[in-house]
Amino acid sequence: MIKIGVLGAGGRMGQAIIAEVQAAADCWLAGGVERPGHPMCGNVIGDGLIVCANAAPVAHKADVLIDFTTPQALEEHLRAAMDGKSAILVGTTGLGAQHHALIDAAAAHIPVLQAANTSLGVTLLAALVEQASRALDTGWDIEIAELHHRHKVDAPSGTALFLGEAAARGRGAPLETLRLPPHEDTSGPRRAGGIGFATLRGGSAAGDHRVLIAGEGERIELAHLAESRDIFAKGAVKAARWLAGKPAGRYRMAEIFGL
Ligand code: NAD
Image (cartoon, rainbow, N blue to C red; front, top):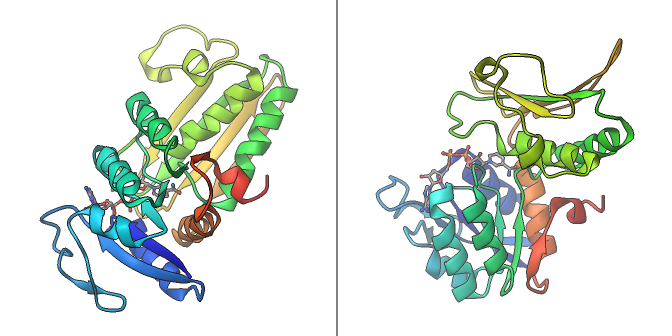
């Protein structure tokens, strides 16, 4: 049995992950955690488990923590995982350089998987984008457009940036040097070789991503459309199974899906 603790238990993703863990014959829900003051704290989930306002006790019981919360909670959650000697999957997006430094430091002690998108489809899409970007010269413009539900707080989405990083790898340069500012904030023609982003927000969309690669006289479009959050929850639980018992280190979804 893989013992899984869910951080952000009352959230959209937390709820989908709890359902996935409870439906899996080889997984056991080791506990749920919510931010202090959240109405779910103290509620009973699973086999008489109480939702805690602190990750530490859950980390001590879990083989793997699954964290879909906010960047502000990351440091505390990594500390809890290290103290409890559990692995952790970080699905939270909107992470900055300081968060990646914290993840790298934790990965020296415990297994950590950080993924802006835990679906098979997006993991494969990133590999295709990297391949296309490597094959085509800078005469082809790369633009990444995303649509998410009205509640999403970070923009562009972590997945759009992840796809941008894949495109930048194909071009042999870091995304920071290739990322274009929003076109409406600039004047003049588009910079050759740059990677642009566009964001749409509205309704209940679970997440659509389109990568447009536009050349002279022809365009290529690679896209992934999420029909529900279940694909992220399924990928997260698959990754948790894979992470349990692994040596300390930082891992990627591509390894879980064998891509
Ligand atoms: P949400 O707002 O519905 O849920 C987040 C939950 O985290 C809330 O219930 C909130 O109260 C809780 N929370 C905040 N601080 C906490 C703390 N310190 N301890 C415990 N819980 C805390 O958001 P969501 O739609 O579930 O998304 C959560 C995150 O996951 C976002 O960053 C989102 O972009 C990301 N996400 C990632 C993927 C992926 O595949 N990696 C997929 C979907 C969403």
